[in-house]
Image (cartoon, rainbow over all chains, first blue to last red):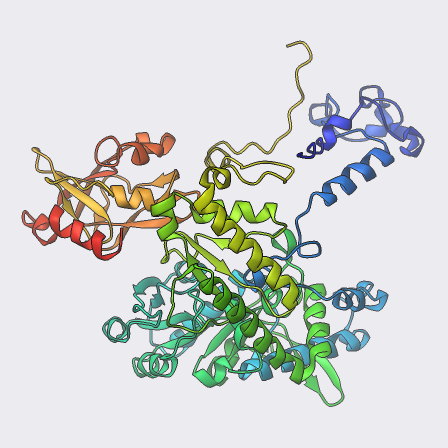
Length: 501
Length: 131
């Protein structure tokens, strides 16, 4: 049976239910009867005439309401979540624990450098570790999200060309297997996007790339492994062609988890990279933020890095600002980005160490290839059957959609009934009816086997009882949601039911 | 199997073009495209007066699955756009070759349609894609 959905907090509200004794003395009683003195110098025309429509509920009702809501969560702390690092991987609890130490929490961002040496040393070491693991020359921790990091990266590419007087370079090449945010970033930075295709095996179409580069090429934005879940094998040739044409290479770090400690973007020839710390370095990203999108660059882009960055002077550390980096693209956030998120990434990396870092890449890849091989053997179609998976792989339900009228969405919804979160559906756009599955390195063999068993059972249901899949899920607080209506008639404001009606 | 209409011209990127008696060319997306996208929830069409470059993105269709660019099959100038689509994007799902038309364009040259695919050639493209 389905649980009854929790009521909204407004429905617990009763007029006047408040802790009157805790109101400031002058404001006790209804707003309408508040004394003129209490309202002070606020002109009559600007005074509120009615109470704001805020819920008036008791503390216990509020506690129960939010506890019950939290129990409706389908989260990585309760269930396997094959969205993987694409969304957010498991955050070890220790990262949170240490980042919440009072010395970090109570530090004021405007405190003088001399009083924040501990924090600054963590940030300096985080910069150094990110440099080491990506093979880049310098790092800035400023950007506060992946897309923000991308913006910083392309802004630096533009600043670099401009500083050289090379003003015609305003085109960014984006392979169709790149991350969806890449063309948006290029456009935001005032560039023109030139899309190039990938070949049947998922690698960049080299001939199309050769035709696309020229005197207007500012750079190329690549994700490697690409969104197709495969490693771009021609990356060195791509780097040669783009550099040969005078362009720079941008690495979208969305899939860095797959190659962690194994291959370094700096060694592949990339000039700039953004790292989604929530994807690869295990920082929280629930509800869309706060995030962190640190950027790393090759030597020629170092002067353009966003400020401030942490520098070392003798035994101490200090913020390097516009005075130290006059060519910087500037500041992208107040202070230095999301300090708490950066600390969590720092602690995660310190806990893993150099050896642990390569085990992340190894186990993420092993787990993906294990699940891929077993699902293939069970009768699922792989989008790229000739390729080894990176940290993720794609199955396509195109055949089942045609033959059985069972879509990727039906499989995704049915998985919920088996206790697994759905993988990414309908992305990448290149593959019809696809499920993009990413187990990540932290899942045990038993959990993976459980997921595989569920997938196989659902594939069986697709043949024997397709109508059952169409109406899934059955065991969730809500049944199949109307996506179309949700997109077209979004209603997020609670309105009281008119009692007179 | 997706519907392909014989008297239209097609682009490989799944747009169709129809030469109207007025000399304008009506443009929309094919049955295969609307089916692949699923239920549309938002359509953005270019304003009248905008110049289109053949093969360049000129409109956006968004479904519950994905947002996708629509590429101009021919070069020309937008004369009219289908205002109905703003409130009823589902017209494209219901009648992609009729009420779901997107824009009407004054072609840059009289021979603009010649480079496009015939219905047979487009059907072959779909067959090759396994659609």
